[in-house]
Length: 530
Image (cartoon, rainbow, N blue to C red; front, side, top):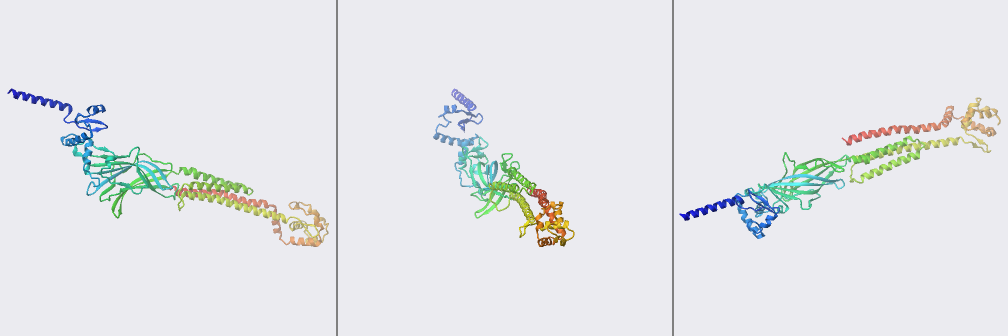
């Protein structure tokens, strides 16, 4: 009886010791490595620092060598069924132990959902017709082979890196129309992998990609550039991998991380996504396309092209106010305006691709060149009229220059003689022709005021023979009186009539050119800005 009591007391003592140790340390120590610290749990878990790790190194329950770690891992895997949470390392090793990377997660096909975040648009190039941007590409699919909810994980998800991603199946998504693409390395490969307990795989890449753009320069510099990127699975058709955009009311498939994306020349005004099924010889692929619309910021072109062109056109109109006598100055003004427009046009077009159609800026510059050319054409007309009038003036002056007869005597123009006879000899030619060389009537009229507007008849006229005087007067009186009067009148007011004609053209140009230019501006801006 005493022996039984001793045994019973020993059993009770052992039971109390086990109960106390269980209360203090927990049922089983569980190992979890988090940044070189070790956790004991689950309910009384805490992170031990490096000091405790060094002190416990070599003890049971703590990994002291790689061989011992391997043995301990096997022991801990068996703990999964004991109701204790499982660490990430144990779960990953268990999942990848018999995983086949070449095998698709499902025999009936895998649904892969894509989401893109636009971090930054670096540049849009007109010459090469492409754009450069930094984006985050997210892929989501479900892999039954990676389910670990039955393992009682300690964490809601597993956050892993590229090394683990290389050991699991991937849809091999590519940009099929990109000119260049690479995953950022800053400083390591920017790949993020997350696995959820239900087998959902969430992969995120930070990618710099250069894609094509479709440029239409008919409305340059008021044009828009459309760029697009297309993603698809490179190895699997839609029977094996069904790729689709994220369909969520709270989260769009294409998201901008910045509120507004602006470049020096462009601003992002619109973006969208769409899905298209494309047939290939190997099957049908789902192509996921994201489109971007960039509107050109034309403020620079207003300052560098349009405003200087306005000033050049206005300067070319100054020549209309200079008159017909300033032909050299007007020529220099028009030619300089034409050269300024030409060089300005070439400087702007040098930075644009060579296209076969007419751009809006081409219409503007060529129209302005036409206005300057027309002002030079008007100057040519004015110069031609001035030159013609000058020749006519010289010719009329030559007609009034005294001539010499065979005897060396001076003979004046018949116009002067007829004027003299008309005003002073109402009795006719016959009477005048029979007078002697010293006819007092002719000498008296020679000093009259009527001859002040023409050249005076010299006295040598009286030395002419009667036959010479008769022939001269008969030739002069063959013209009608009104025609003779018109000839003399045109000569005296020649200068006034000539400048009135050239001034009339200049006045018409001063009014016509601005009106036509205003009409052109109304049509131009109304068409290209609408």
